[in-house]
Length: 447
Image (tube, rainbow, N blue to C red):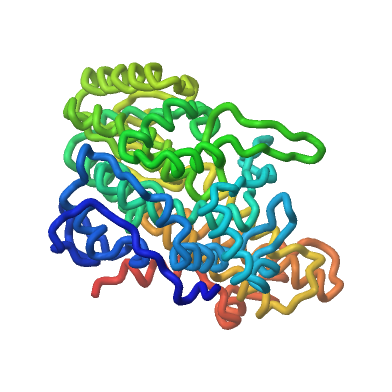
């Protein structure tokens, strides 16, 4: 079976042939959709709407060879760890055509069943961990194919107040909107925190929400199977009763679909809400409006079997000192925008891991590993207060001096004046080390 050429035709509702890939439908740009799924007729149906507002006969698009091939290429590009079956991306690649053919046959014949997911825990600040579930490679491929088919259907409905895990939208867009609203006088802010959102989404209500747009029974059953995947951690194995698995390809789409009615409710009532996945703020012009906004959020959350973390949810006028709020790594307070306290801790931990004193690699190689993470961190936080960058640059150079001392078999950790003379700041600049202070200075110069 040749996965590079085989493709089946499937029926879509009869609509005029008018939409083209990349056309604006309902004010949206659809150029990002996968062409092997969303051909001209499908896009026209997306543009004009389908009868009853529900999509039928979608499962055949999931197992279409061209779609599985496109999904596999995305999974391969993302790499990632092996799942519970211990099959790596490289091992799958060695026999990809055979495995993809088997997936097509299993999905088409209704015998496909996802494997259990492997649960690991990654650090999330002092004494905390974030549970992450790692699906098998083949299951990541099927989930990616599901996403390629389903995402445009949901994107057509999603509002522009939602920014997380959506095509051509991201953190910086959400932060720009928060900045704009603050400057427009919306300074009374509801900073709400959903308690363990991804782990507590009720399955039955979530499936009903998906069923409002999708009426393909086999596709819905497939989604349900992924929600109920057994979890394996060491010798333990259990079946989840709620939540969407963090680490699964379709999890962000499902999570966004569950919160979409909250977006609609807040907009209908005139509130300015900015949401990135489960992290959101409601920006208001008065204290009374903010308190009423929090009441709206609380009512919706309770009615939808979720809960707020009351210790992390608050209302305040962010113009006042001590009443600011955190959002997407930044802290907003008294007209300033700083890096949130936890954000430097995370990057410093990564720098420590890269600059261990016992590491025997050359300075050039270590700098080559450091620079991408430093540039990425600066690129995200470049609008923060400039003192942030001076401290971070100094920390990186101290780590490198300590490493160089160790390589030269000198005692100590490299914090003395002699080491500054031996390896001055200019030494690291000549070696190619990226410095945030210099990048900020260049960006601040008039053009």
